[in-house]
Image (tube, rainbow, N blue to C red; front, side):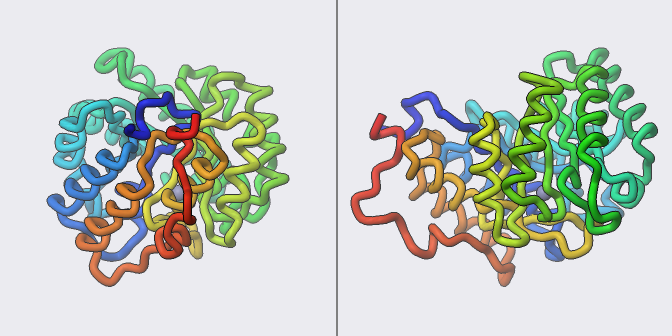
Length: 314
Ligand code: ZN
């Protein structure tokens, strides 16, 4: 029986081909990216952020974004996502035919200027422009905002929770479908995650989106569990823990997809993802980025004796 027969309890959104690849120095070639994405899909991942639409001079790793999207669109049942920082990126993503875009809005004013060279108000105006473009050209496309540096910023330090919630309310009022919280810099702790996601649900209800948590200080899984406990059901993660932010010095390491899937499956929850096939998806990643370190405890330790995935139990 395939693990995908039961409706998943939790959506794992793979961001390695975007968040992971844009933070490593080496560039993975298009064919390797496509192989890797196919392997992720074969393992059961049903949402993958496959690229970001940014100027090639800023992120040469993403120069083939449209080609990668074109390949991902051939994979059945896959929601193909891309990150877009501005209107121009949104135009390119719509032209490429993505199902959903994710717009990073920095909760930290300092990170906003460093990352997208815009103040909060300028960025909110850009979000409104992108929503108007969707209305005109791609009304079926999903639009998500990820509030980056929501739990702290390497440039500014603490980020006021009131400011995070104000921005979440503003983007939902503007018309985005959902708004998640990102620990871009790996500064979050579980108590903070619980508190801020609770406030997010209270403020924007069902528009509350994904938890995007990094493992920079080893708290990635603990933070995911805290988010799960207060009702979050979509989690970004990166195969092999690739990831970081080129404009947040010292930030590295998304939550490792393999470990996150193992945690949920071991709890008896269904992710729809086959762990053995997920481990196998590390091979095309490593083939495309020779010498790049990959992380994750579960792939090294292997599955425990007698372990049965959640879908087979329930
Ligand atoms: Zn990230």
